Image (tube, rainbow, N blue to C red; front, side, top):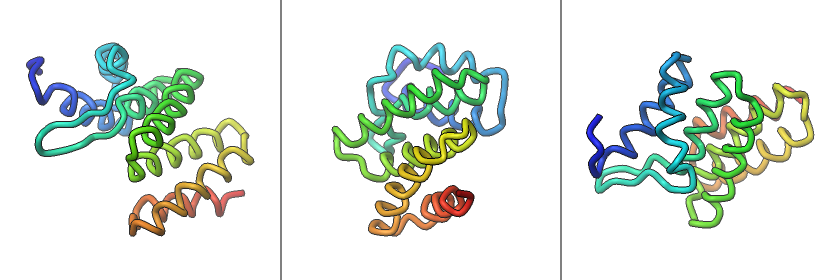
Length: 138
């Protein structure tokens, strides 16, 4: 992938895909994205959100749980600081899902509730549905 104006958004989209699959190239994507973790992926046609979100989901998929949680916490902070409520909700949901896996039900419930509130206000049905699943598994 050429290092041009679309590189960061392309790499974040790739990283999210590699985390879902999961795929061994996720480690390669994390390594490439880590220097940009404090930034937001944006191009003239799209916004992919905080790079920390993508680093977080890939790190978690690779079994690097603490790194994944730290990056997702950073993604929440970045989203809030720069005014990206959609990505804040997605980051909160991703963090809530992973906290639930670690047994932190209180943290998962708080974050999923926060994500659900934003999703309901903005009409983000998919994220709202997933947040409701986390809340329903209390």
